[in-house]
Image (tube, rainbow, N blue to C red; front, side, top):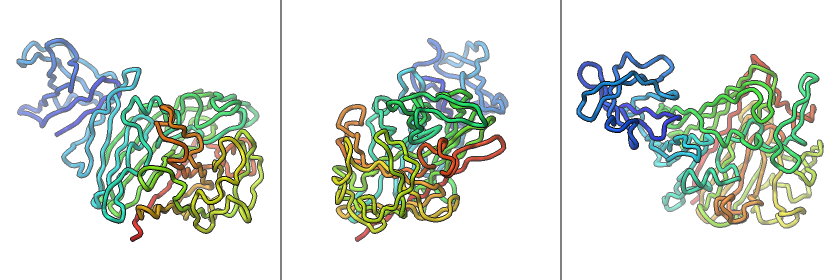
Length: 428
C-alpha cells in the first residue's frame, strides 16, 4: 500500500496498490471532493518532485473524467508495507479544519509511542513495569480538541524559544526586537502561538536503529516578533534497544535566537502524584529566579538547599520549603560536563512500578518543573497539581539578555542542533 496524507485536506487520502497501466486508485476516507466523484486515479508519472498530487477526478463507475486537480498542500508519500512497526491514521482536524494525523510506533521490545503532527507532540509512551504491564508514562489528552484546549504545552516542541525571555525583548547587532507577551509581562515558550500550536509536516520512518517520525516546519520572518525565517526539524526515534531519542535542528536566514525543547510531562507510575518519584540531577548549580520566573543572572550552588538533587531523593521530600505561589520546582540547572557533548543530565525513577529513566543531553540546561500549575481544569488536561513533571533540556532561560550564559544566537550559515536521549528500564 501507498499512503498519502495532506496537511491541507479534511481527511487523509489512501492510495491502493498500483493497477495495470501504472495507475492507482485513490479513495478519500470521507467527504468526497465532489458529489459522485469519490474515486480518483493518478498515473505514477504525474507525481511532481515536491510530492504534490495531480489527480483526475472520475465518478464511482470509473468514467466521466474531469479537469486536472492539484492538491492544496504537499503530500507525504511512503510505501507503508516497508515501515515495520509504524502506522499512520487520522487524528481528526483542528478547529480551523486542518487535518491532523496520529503516528503509532512500536519497537522490537514492545514499547509503544504515539505522536501527532499538531505541535510535533507525543501523545503517549507505553512502557512496562516490573510485572511487564504496559502503561502510558506521559500526560496526554483524549483527542485533538483536548490538545488544542490545553494551555500547558503537553509533550509538544516548544519554540522558537522555550522558557522565558524577560519583557519579550532582546537586541541583536544593535537592533531591538519586541516579542509577543503571553506570560504576564514576559514571553514564554515562543509566544501566543508558538511551535506547539502549529501542524507540522512529518515523515515516519522505520530503520535499523528504531522507529519514529521526523517533523519539520518553516517559522516565517516576524513570527511572534522573531527576526528571520527558521527551518525547524524535530526527530523522535524509539530505538530497538529501549531509548527515546529527540533531535532538534534549525537554520535561519537572519540572525535570531533559537532554543527548542520537547515538553513531555512524565509520570512513570502512569497515574497519581509524582511526589514519590525519586530524582537525581547532574547539576551542582542552578539559576535563581525572580517572582516572574526570570533568572537573576547568578548561578548558585545547590549545596544545603532544597534544590540539591545530586543524590537521588523523592521530589516531595523538601518541596514545601520552596516559597512562592503555587510553589514547587520550576528552575533551570546547569548540567555538568562539556556543552555540546552528550552527557548525563538526570535520572528519574518510580519505586512503585519499578520504572526508571536516564536522560543524557548536549544542552547546557535542564529545567525541572514539578507540575505546579496543573489544576484539574480543561486547560491543564484535567490533571491535578503535581500529577506530572517536566525535565526540559535547553539553553538557559532569558539567555538573549545574559551574554555570560551559553548563547542561543543563531546566524545564517550556522546550524542549531540539540540531542537528548531517554533510556528506560525497570528495577526488580
